[in-house]
Length: 219
Image 1 (tube, one colour):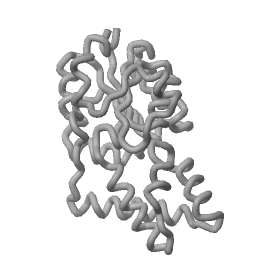
Image 2: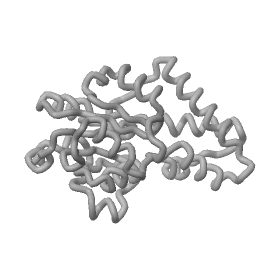
Image 3: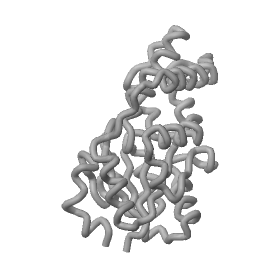
């Protein structure tokens, strides 16, 4: 029986990925580099350190990755400070409210940093729904390692078999599946791998599509 529903944040609850891409693109352009969307796809859903390895591999070992990451963060925070809009993904708020009103525990397991997670949850007025929030600052091994999900279950004192996860990225879904949690995938940027196709509980186009399967999801 499912008692806990765990959500990823970027790309699942919020349509932040296009914003992050533009921030990376601007930061790289200041260094005379062309940050392509294909490169961005390789960085989605993983830790900053892992993303750094992809970026250095792409541009070369002389790349000042720390400067690019720092500038990307500054550009993103400038966007937030200018009251730039952050949109929910389709069905995201409704799904949170639905599970919350059913009396289930809700948790967030994000690869983002705590400061940005808290800012976005408060800005969009959904922090109140979560009994637990775990970010990249709280783990030593980022997704696709299952640590963030195992730590979430431990914090809430629930067994992994009681957890239903919603993820959008390949790395995130792999982490949840490896943690032996019931994993539903709502792809945004990357198509599911064969491993995810074979091991995910359900795959949806949108969080708006989950309701006909609710008995199966929560049983």
